[in-house]
Amino acid sequence: MLGKLLKHEFRATARTMWPFYAALLITSLGANVAVRVMESKKYSDSVLLRIFSTLVIILFVVALAAVGIMTLVMMVQRFQKNLLTSEGYLMFTLPVSEHSLILSKTITAAVWFLATGAAQVLAMLIMSFRVSYVNKAWEDIRQLFSQITSYYAVNGAAFILEALAVAFLGCAVTCLMFYAAMALGYGFPTHKGLLSVVFFFVFLVALQILGTMGLFASFDGGLLGRGYVGTNTAVEVIRSVHLAMGVAAAAELVLGGIFYAVTALNLKHRLNLE
Amino acid sequence: MKWEFRNDAPIYSQLIALMKLGIASGEFKPGERVPPVRDFALQAGVNPNTMQRALTELEREGLVFSQRTAGRFVTEDAQMIDETKRKLAEAQVRSFLGAMSRLGYGKDEIVGMLGQCGPADSGENEKEAAENADL
Amino acid sequence: MPIFECRNLTKSYGAAPALSNVSLTVEPGRVVGLLGPNGSGKTTMIKLANGLLTPNSGEVLINGMKPGIETKKIVSYLPERTYLSEWMSAAQLMDFFGDFYPDFRRDRAEEMLARLGISQQQRVKQMSKGTREKVQLIMVMSRAAKLYLLDEPIGGVDPATRDYILSTIIQNYEPDSSIIISTHLIADVEKVLDEVIFLNRGEVVLRSSVDAIREEKGKSVDELFREVFRC
Image (cartoon, rainbow over all chains, first blue to last red):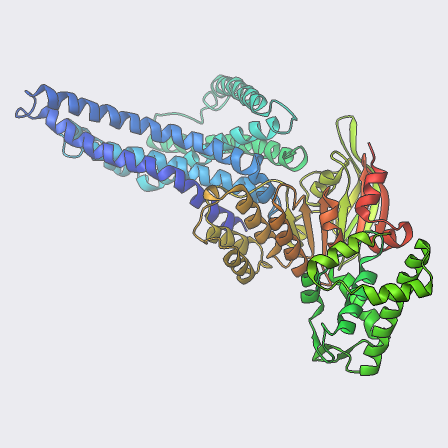
């Protein structure tokens, strides 16, 4: 059933997202042209062309931001509309558990976040394709990458996969934080939206406090102090990086678990669709 | 068949009465197939259980019979149909006589009136007559 | 085994009890009217049966089971409001229902849509209110469920649509499934009902067959209702 929900989720959300991706693609292509126009001696004399190019580049930046913001907005709106308003009558009477419902939304949203990130990177690449100074930067990155791989005998790809997994978890946990706030807020008879926002900020503040505490703990008597983390030898660096990833993943799992539990319990017991 | 129901009697007994009338008047021909319960209930706009109850009762009285796989049929027993017709007619007469006696008419005056008045058989006159007859 | 059962069912919103200690059973093969004025607890009972609410005490059982995934497989619910996603077309709706409900009879749904002249490609947001309600009803009644819960199915529609809805209900009757109709438009629905339950202020005030009420009291359920709930 989760598979079916996922399929349905992607279909429903892709409808909203693809125009933004299309806009990003178009503006990135346009920006590439615009930058070349700006650079070439031939065209930089015409004021009109300069204004036009600047506009296109601005549009590109806007599109970059818009895609990111839209992904977040879509994630929140989808959960609220599909589960907490009239459509909830359909979703909560399907023969699926509320776990499947929450998970399908979380996974889909996290995938979109990653996709948006990838799209933004891709858009940047398109924009800077064969543009002089960026090419040089790109060369440097590639050199660095192969150096890491050879020097530390670490498979760079595996490292990237680990990072992706942690990123995916991070996105999922972010989604769950929003979901938990909404599930809590909508359990009340009135001011549902307002309360959801309040709960969200409560979570945010709590996270900041925890984060700061965690940071102090790791420096003071914790990991750093005990010599687990260091940058002296190659082995140490590898170990530190893996450790950092592991700690990050563990923290996210714990946080995710808490937010998930809050969401699930509220949806199961306190939900009252109007 | 106009499926109209009053409020003061159970639907199933009104169904029985309507169907007896249909059989007696020839609207449901002898040996004609009775629709399956669900379709018939749909036609009449009633609950299938109710229709089932009515048909079962009619079967019990012998006005309708069922053949295992073929379904239900109106009886072909002409005698039974005539008997039903007679009973319905008798009920009408009794009701008529009761109403007339309340108006104070005796048998001779009734016979005289019968000679004068015709039955209301065009649509409009029937309605008017029924309205005026509402005693 | 009753298809639907309430045992000492109580649900309160805050201090106000919506249902107080309600106990009743519904056997398979019955069309039951759940009748009562607004706020009597009808919708609360239906939501509890669907697992959309949890009781404060007591229980509600569908075919002997507590509301959950297994009961949702055999219960088909028509809420008072439209719950369809606006962007979906009728065809996509049927895909959706077919995906999640093995008992969904797509051929019936397609036939009903065709009979009403509703194009399968039409999207929900392009449909009028009346059409949306019909489409929702078609989806719900096209499932071969054991229990149909219809909350005010004929509430805001024109008389012709009302007749169509009642016909659909009659056509979907099966001896091993039951239909519970919650409504306050009794006169229209009465001929289709086997039994009625009167609810008032969260309690059952009457439970009887329609025939018994007419035989014993010499009046229709509608007339009796007006008496019982006279303001």
